[in-house]
Length: 249
Length: 104
Image 1 (cartoon, rainbow over the protein chains, first blue to last red):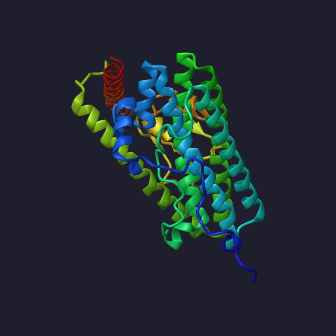
Image 2 (spheres, rainbow over the protein chains, first blue to last red; image 1 turned 135 degrees about the horizontal axis):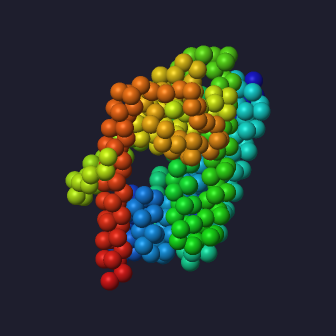
Image 3 (cartoon, rainbow over the protein chains, first blue to last red; image 1 turned 90 degrees about the vertical axis):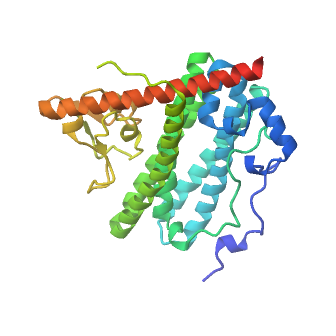
């Protein structure tokens, strides 16, 4: 048995210049600077920024950075996934599909970096919206099953990303940001393929090992419940601060 | 009338399920790991067909919910629309206030 590929890789996590710096890692000065630009860290998320960009185009830049952060994370995640599939008994062309997906995420990263520049910003002006590569975080072995990962990330998370990209594309179309519209239309087409890849391979793996389908579905349901809980909290917050409106019958 | 999801083309992205105003598209209880429309809750709004990235949801005029089920589904849809409106209006007014504060 040869040494696993990931053990032969140089130690240390993925690097980016400027390095990953999540919103939680900001200094007090950086926090104050962000508050001056965006009104506070609570506004630094795609949902609020999208509505702020609807009013003022300068908020497109932090919106794109928020998306770009997730794309960087995608390159890291799928890149690792390609390497780690070596440890599971999966078809080589499934690994190839995830290599393609890693390439797609890299392309999205480049697209969004250029987009950021076209909007007068750059990587580093705003913090990363999510944590960087989590090389040191211990993930339970059962959660590393390719079927579980595909159900959570490819199907569920990328499924949600479809809605996000479409909402940004639609906003860009309405506000005349043709470059943003074009790029996010392109990204969305890739996301459809990624969901399709996850669904196809989950089906294939489950044909031989039916327990995988059951576990994957449970993992996806749990993951979606978490996302729905956040949405529900947002609804409750907005419901508490907004006058109730009735919808005509 | 109801809608049907063509099982061989569906990629399970869940977009239709998230947008359905009557929550009548199901996935987690499905036997064959695919999304399906429960016709009794369908109000024929066409939202699912419009958002489907695979264009695999089509209209089936032969399947109709009972009048009672249709009325119950419409009630659910009105409630859903009301909640969506609250969220949209609340979010927009919050964002607008933030922009005004930052630009003034």
